[in-house]
Structures are given as structure tokens and as C-alpha cells.
Image (cartoon, rainbow, N blue to C red; front, side, top):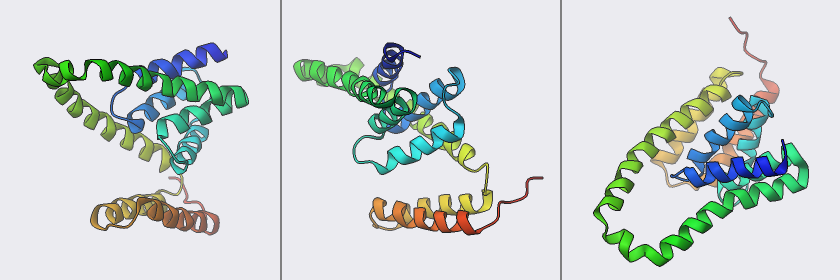
Length: 183
């Protein structure tokens, strides 16, 4: 895949996706794992996990790491530019037409409708990523997933600390617990 084609794919995904990084990441995964077959699914899950630990938007981090995986440093730079450019263009346009957009009934209705669709996309994304992540070590992975959810829902502990603690638990568990037998 050429750098230009990579740029166009990330740019298009970023331009056409609303709802933030967690709606963009599954589309990047779909494009480069399932459609183009350029990255293995387990590698992409590792890139996604790594992109969640980096500061900044997850969509940009995922595009950067995907570009780096495919094309090295130049791919990483192209990934960043392709992921950042569409929101920058949209925000620049909205800046000049904000008053009109804010008062327009149809724009407000469309945005309200998209929020429901974005929720559905987020649920599907979480399901797909969880399903792929739970292929090995199903019990321990499920317990870590549930612990992360419950801790973040019912406590005010910083999400970064939750991720760090559960990452350490995962490292210890996956290193010292034998792999479960598959039926």
C-alpha cells in the first residue's frame, strides 16, 4: 500500500466518522485487518491497546501506530496528518457558520439522531474488541474486563490508575497462569 493510499483511507475514515476515537478505531481495524489484510488481528489489537496508553486522542494514536506498522516513520507522520486534518477542516468551517448551525432545526435534529447511532456503534465496537480480546485466557480476560467496568462505574478512581492496576494484574496473570484448554 502506498503512502498516498494509506493517507486517503485514514483521511476518509476520519472525515466520515462522528463520535470520537472509539468509533474510528473499529473502522481502522476493519479496513487494515479484514479488507486489506495488511495487519493480523492480534497485531491490531496490540496497536489499539498501545494507542490507549498514549496521551491524546485514541484515533490519532491508532492512525500513527498503524502507519508506523505499515510504513515506518513516514507512515506514522502520514497517519497523524490524515487523522487530524478532517476534524481541523470541520472545526474551521463550523467556526464561521456556528450561529447558523446552532439555530438550524435540521442540523440539531441530525446531530441528535447521530448520537443514537454513535451509541450503537460504540456498543458494537466494544463487543467486537472484547470478543477478539477474549480468544485466549477467557476467564481471566473476562474478570479483568468486568473489574475495569465496575471500578470505573462505581468509584471515582482515575481511569489511568485503573488501567495501570489492571495492566499489572494482566501481566502477572498471563505470565504465570497456564493457557486455558480449548474444547
